[in-house]
Length: 69
Image (tube, rainbow, N blue to C red; front, side, top):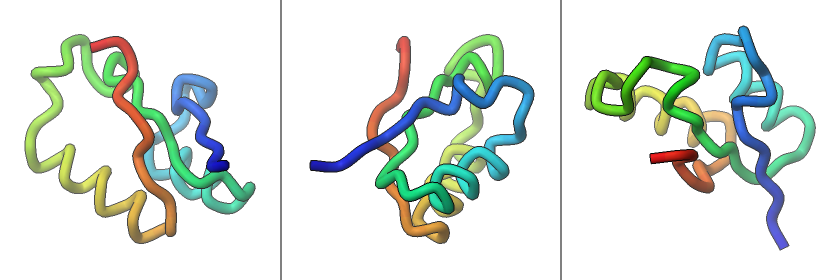
């Protein structure tokens, strides 16, 4: 079994800080709530999506889901 937590829990945190904390505390993945990054999911650029994906991978965790799309 793998465990993930939604970045919405870390209200006010930068996504990179959330990813690092999630990895450090032993979770396997993070769920991304796009509304924590922009008003609309379409406002999160391809470049930013790739950067978030790479940050998660670089910290040894996956992205389990995209919340509320």
